[in-house]
Image (cartoon, rainbow, N blue to C red; front, side, top):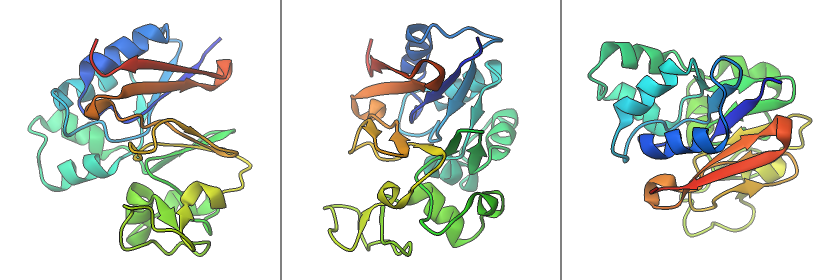
Length: 206
């Protein structure tokens, strides 16, 4: 059976990524690896992570750090830069939507293929918002009402898989799953395999 292995924010932590795939019993050519963005920055080997993604024929959405590295020209290898630049903001499956940070409460699925301007910033950076999608001046400390975690406004039917929120850690709510478990800060790297309804984690350092 083919499986999808959704992976949280890797941030250049190639060793943890490799160990996570081993822990998930990744089967090359059969399983599909799908990353929720922030492949680069902060960790020790961002180019290595990009090369591994290409070797795996893996899928990914852009994260805010990926977007910034591309904008700043921080990827020296043009092959790696071109691959990362071709990543979309969202990926849509029959049962799951993948985005780096979150979805606006008023977006429908048809909107996801044509995000631009402020929509791009929202998809890459949101944590808290109101029912109309207004974001607070700051995400920390928690801003309180009327702001709430964006996923509390998302009612499905598809589950959203996202990253970006290291402080929150692994988060499973009614219609969303957050996979950023702060690997680059010494936490863990997390994967979700929906076909087995299973989470796999490895510590940041082996």
